[in-house]
Amino acid sequence: MWKRKKKTAKPGPALSLELCDLCGQVFPEQEAVSCHVPDSSAADPGNDWFDGLRRLTACSEAHLEVVRERYLRRPYVEEELWAAKINRVLTTGPCVLTLEQLACRTGLHEPEIRRAVAWHNDHRRRPPEP
Image 1 (tube, helix red, strand yellow):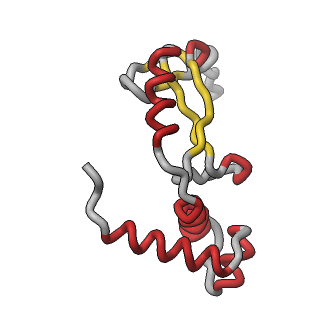
Image 2: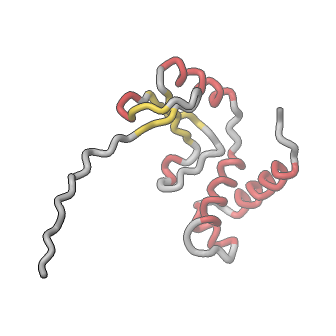
């Protein structure tokens, strides 16, 4: 016995949604207002050209400006960026066994790696600022 395939409706275009970084409102992607700001804690998972930059998204220019001002007041610390790069390498891809391999995969030099590790260890022990 032959069975006929049931006709299924073709799915329409997927609606992409964004989330406001200030108020948490969900809105269509085409209504988003966004910019990039310097942020030493940001290591892009897919493209290291964007390391040190954070993309902000908001539902309005006013909300974007509030979030942008918060990030611009935050200090930019090279060791924090290096620590973020090291974390990305250690949590993705093949295992890193030596300092030379870590340097090769992060693009950092040994003194930078040591400073990043020291920065990370110092900030891990410190209680969070209020």
